Amino acid sequence: MNTKFETIQLEQKGDFAVLTISREKSLNALNLQVHTELHACLSTLKNNADKLRGLILTGAGEKAFIAGADIVEMSKMSSQEAFDFATLGQQVSLLFEELPFPVIACVNGFALGGGCEMAMSCDFIYATQTAMFGQPEVKLGLIPGFGGTQRLAKLIGRNKAKELIFTGRNIKVEEAKEMGLVVKTFETKDEMLAAAVTTLTKIGMNSPLAVSVAKRVMNEGCDLTIEDGLKVEAKYFGEIFGTADMIEGTTAFLEKRKANFNN
Ligand code: HXC
Image (cartoon, rainbow, N blue to C red; front, side, top):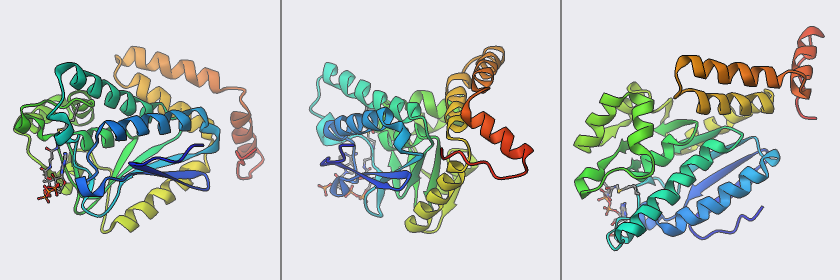
């Protein structure tokens, strides 16, 4: 895997990898180069998915996860360039969803605008006590462009999302947790990263195939009508039957031993 990038770092630790946005001086703001590198990196991970069981996304330093899209760069963009920039960022956000293993966003400090949007495209969010979320784009005469108008509404409900996007107000971690945006909170960044590894390790002991199919069914099905969502669920439930993981999992139960999905 090519792990040589300038604005991001990919560090593989056994079955897991930590992807860090590394523009600390600009509070890890997302410019075109970050998105281009993220796109290349996530495409490679997707094509080599058998080598990994989970990914952690975080920001360099203590102050910010990602303080949004790069305002300096955006301020010079034409309408067409802005469209292309939003489209590239959206493709990156979809790649996080398409990775066939869990992705945990570990949010330290500011997760604003595009930062909040990238966190929301991960499977779930862990955050430190200093984390701050928000979609402040309207304060800049902009709207969210990396999926915020859609994913925030789906995650916390349309009206609560409207209140946050229209006011552009930042919310502290307690409120983000209460809204269901954040799953767990931690005192320090190190504690959070260690907990994310523990969670991925626990998930990694389950059938990787079943976890990836559950992720796919939930991503594909959650926005459909209940009837259509249930059809997607039944389709994949049927397809998973007869797979090596399903045979190992059920056989291990019947033989009263722990399943070993590492073959
Ligand atoms: C470019 C940024 C930046 C950003 C911070 N910096 N956020 N540069 N783009 N989004 C830079 C600052 O200019 C400064 O550089 C350095 O990082 C440190 O930031 P400070 O402002 O000095 O720190 P502080 O006073 O602690 O304030 C932190 C902050 C503030 C509250 C996070 O920086 C801020 O409000 N940033 C913008 C947040 C925002 O509006 N995000 C949404 C962007 S729009 P210098 O060189 O001066 O030291 C967006 C759209 C997504 O995300 C969709 C696009 C398609």
